[in-house]
Length: 302
Image: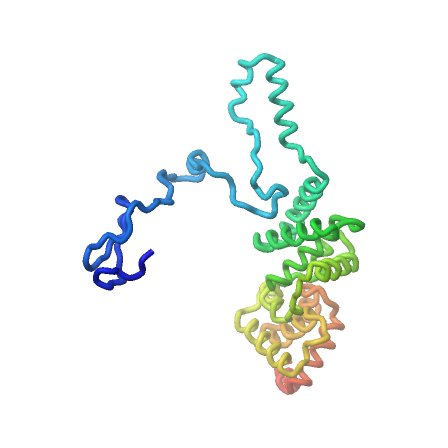
C-alpha cells in the first residue's frame, strides 16, 4: 500500500468503496483498484434478524472445551423427519446423540472443569477476560499433566486466583475458596504448584487494588477512596506494606480515611467487608498512624 502519492507526493487519499479504488485526493491518481470489500453485504435491525442472516459461528474462546469450533445438530426442521422411515429417523437421533458426546478423557475433563469455572466466576462476578485467562491456564496445566493427583476443582480455583492476580482484579484466597467449595489451604498449595510449573510470574498484590471494591461496598465517597489511596502510597514509600496482608492494610487505610473525611465506619463494618478480623485492622491502623505521624489528626477526628 502506498503511503505517498508517487505523482504529487500527497498523503491524502479517498477510498471509493463502490469501485474498490484508492484515489489521491489532490491529483486524482488511482493508486489501488479492485480492493476486496471485507464488510458484510446485509443489514440486520435486531438480534434475531442478525442470528438468521449471520453465516459464521461464534468467536474462538478458551472457555469452551472445543474452543467454540464444533458444530451441532440443531432441533430445527424436525417436522421433516416424519417423512422418513422409522429406521432412518432412529439413525438421525442416534447420530445426534453421538455427535453431542465428547470422545476423549481430556475433552471430558475440560468440559467439567470449564463448567465449574463458569459457576465460580459467575458467583464471584468476574469479567470475561478473567474467565478466558483462567481457561488458558487450566488448559496448559492439563497439557503438562499437572491435574493428575489433584482435584479438578482445586486446579480450577488456583487458575482462577492466578488469573485475578494477573489482571489486578482484587479477589482474596478466602473468596476463591468459598466460591469453589475448596479449602483455602488446598487452593493456595495448588496455586503455588501450577504457577511454579508453568513459569507464571506474578507481582505481589497491592493493597491499593482492594480500595475501590471495599469502599464501594461500604458506600464511601470518591473523596474517601482517594484519601485511602494517598495513605497507602505514603505507607508504601516508608515500606510499611511489605510482609503484611494486603487486605488488612487496605482495610486499615479505609478506616483511617473514612474517619478523617467524617464518613465514619466502625472497625467491625470494615472488617466484615474486607474479610479480616478487627484485631488485624487495629494492628495495621496503629502502625499507619504512628509511622505516618497521623495521631493528632485521628485524635481530632475521633
